[in-house]
Length: 615
Image 1 (tube, helix red, strand yellow):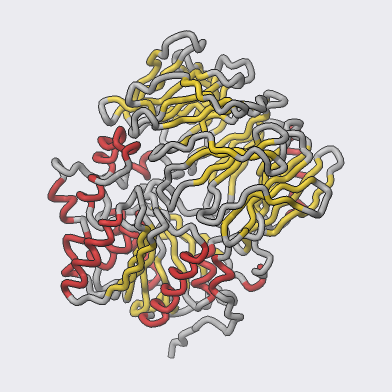
Image 2 (cartoon, one colour; image 1 turned 90 degrees about the horizontal axis):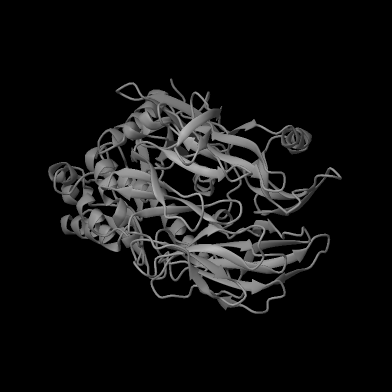
């Protein structure tokens, strides 16, 4: 007789421990290498602290109680800039404060305006370049911001289609990316700022040519491109013609996703790909490779990288993590070869109590290879586990991907005895152009089949108990959750939808204004409400709520600018009209996901009870 292997007894970790704000996170080094800055909780909100290196005491320099700060950067050795929005509206405003907490001021405090950082001007202490959609909510104009006077100087006027601006190493505005005819991308370039931009390349949006960094002499660029190939490759390119001069690095299985460049030495250091387990790094610089070789034995068992460095690049912050810890920050003095741990993000969680995230793979019904991750309750192995309750957890986006590493939701659910299954369905990024385009207009169709095929693989392997499979996702993952219980109603015992799309037609009508220049692209990727009307109706869960049988929990932020609250409202209304069990949580001070700690606690507390009841 086959034995059912439930998870062994384990220490039940309080839910709050998984979703507490990190004790200290977001570490950065001052340009002179004398101070750390970091975020830490104060009144349950992440605020800015500074600490002189080598001293035990830190100073809090902000006092936010409504909303955690969203990001920060040093603007010279004595001033820090930071961003925050209002109640999740994603209209980020830029603020500044001195190292001692004095001269705190708002630089871009404009109602309904979103701030983007274009260039931090690393070697300039009193200015940055930002993008603002103040003139037109649909597009961003570039401005030079004088941090001493607060004066904003407009550097160019967005003609209405520019989606991104690029500066050279001197902070001069030299390139831009524009959308034309809805689905074509143009690269614009100029040699000098007193010249007009001219078009140097026009491609379909499916093709990528992305200028990442100028060469030290500001003449050529390092670019990521998939022109004439499937995977993004790092190349040397002439920006005046977009002629590819040299292939610097490419990988047969994954897109090149980033590069590292030394401003001090004017050298390309490395390029990276995200693989099934961890990061693949290719080095161009022997000194940088030697630094990693020195650190590797001291950080064995962790994936690590340089999180920040001072202007000399000889003092560094190293971030190290794996699948069982939120991570650690280390201070590394390159010349002394001295490595010192300065922070652990969640010291209340013991790595030994956490579960391993296992890279697995399966093949879809039409022969596509899918990379996935399976997190089993601690103490179980994939060889011995049988008939566990499983929570299928598709990622958001959908134009992003799941990666190997620590995931608080996976650890929490595994601690409660569930296996958690994540998969990089077609349309996920990082696997090349063909894989991404295989997801075009496949919401609720082949993309959903990839998820369904993953569940069936789990059942065939004996891992999942077919009567105890749930699905939970956020954003696009929320859509996939609703599609799963709508179009495969017998597959799932229950479901949790977090800020998910329910109606493709109304979703397209309520996107943020700065998405509107890209609407034609979204029509090609998701569906055109006119040309593809019938398909979009057929793939909208809210319009087929009569098929749903599984109990649902839905959570929504009232101020969500990406997935309007009406997406959840109409789903809940349709289900309640039919008498289907649905719990609905709305937070009035949140947007696309819950940022405030007390709201996270509320959500996961309800989720825990919901899964316990139905699985």
